[in-house]
Length: 121
Image 1 (cartoon, rainbow, N blue to C red):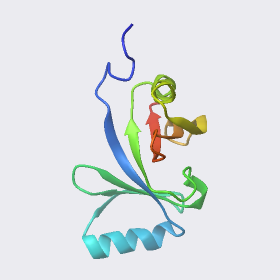
Image 2 (spheres, rainbow, N blue to C red):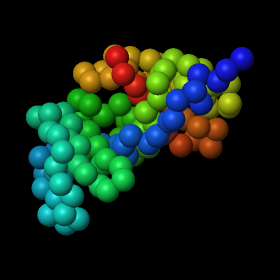
Image 3 (cartoon, rainbow, N blue to C red):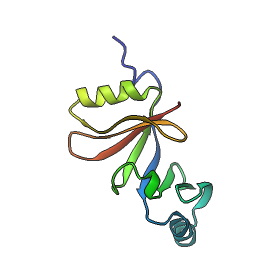
């Protein structure tokens, strides 16, 4: 049986940071660290260029992790990756759902670290 998670290259697409105020957080990270703004979706979400990864600032309506920072893994098939995570000893925090730009789920690895798994709609 082929492993659907390993069939395509998986990468950390972003590091998710929940914030109370997206605009203020964008100003902070651009002023303090010089990160360039890649994308802003109102008070919901902003993506900042942090070199080889993206710093994703999630406002209250887009905070899927309950205020916990998390690595977000971009995978070709979210359902298969979530099933593999559970089979490997992880647990589901938020079931598979359709977000505004992707399909996603929130889980914990066997050590309790929160991760977001996402992919194309």
